[in-house]
Amino acid sequence: MIILAATPIGNLKDASVRLVEALGTATVIAAEDTRVTQRLLAALGIENRPRLIALHDHNEREKSIELVELARETDVLVLSDAGMPTVSDPGFHLVDAAASAGVTVTALPGPSAVLTALAVSGLPTDRFSFEGFLPRKHGERISTFGELRDERRTMVFFESPNRLAASLTDMASVFGADRRVVVCRELTKFYEEVKRGSAAELAEWAASGVKGEICIVVAGAEKRVGDLATGVAEVLALVAAGERLKDAAAVVAEGTGLGKRELYQAALEAKPAKPGKPVAPAAPQG
Image (cartoon, rainbow, N blue to C red; front, side, top):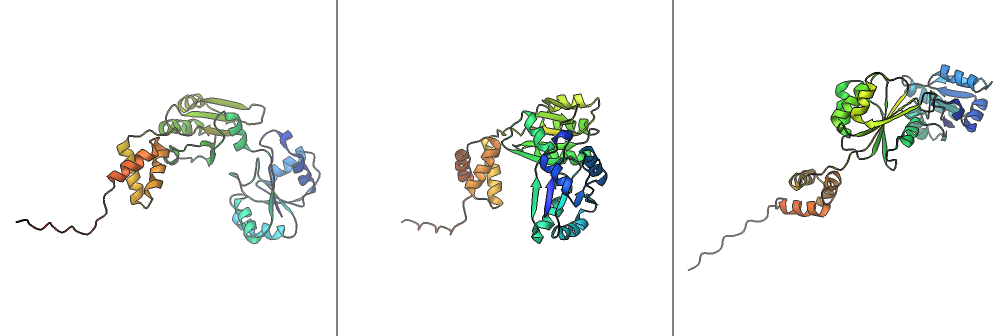
C-alpha cells in the first residue's frame, strides 16, 4: 500500500496522531528530502529508523516503478517536506503508477498551505483553483495571468519571496490594480502574517522586501459587461467553431453579463441563412 502523509507546514504541533503513529511503525519511507524527514523524526521524538528512499522531482518517474513493486509487499509511507504530497510536491507520478498497477493508495490528511491560505483570506471559498508556483520569468507570468484574467473562481498561487513584488506588479497590470489580493506569509509559524489589499497596494508593500514561505490568494474576476454587438460576434464565432447556438449563447452570457435569451435571439437573427435551392423567377405576365 502507498500511504500519502501530510506533514506540518510550520508548526510541529500540527503533526497528527495518525502521522506520529505511522512514522513510529513505518519500515519504508519515500521522502522528498531524507534529511528533512530525519529532522522530523528527531523533533517528534520518534526512535524508529525506517529505510529512507529519496523521491523528488528529478527521480520520481524512475523510482515510482521500484516503489510500486515494494508497496505490493509492505506499506510505503510517502512524505513531502511540508504539507500533502502531490500538491506542488512529488507524488503524482507515484500515485498514477500505483493506480495503474492496482496497488492501493490512501492518505493521512493534515496540514495544507493551500487550504489554510484560502480559509484565512476572507475571499470566496465556494469555488477556487490552485495554480501552483508562478513562472519565474516576467513574460511567462504575464502570459499566465492573461490566461486567468477572466477566471471567476478564487485563485491560490505559491511564490518565492524574492519574486513576490514583481509578480504582484505583473498581476496588477493584467488583472487590474484594484483586484483584491491576500498575501499569506509563514502560515502556522511564529511570524505568520496575512496582508490584504489591492494588487497595486500589495505590490508597493512587497517592494521593500518580504521573507518566508508565501501563498497568494486572488479574488476571481467580475463578470465582463459587454455590448450586444460584441457578444453576438462572440456567439457566432463559437457557432462557427462547432458549438450549438444555445450553448454558445450561454457561454458568452456567463462571461459578459449579457442576457442569454437576448444573445440567442440576436445571434439567431444575425446568423447567415443556409444556402438553399435557387428560386425560379416568376413567369412574365401578359
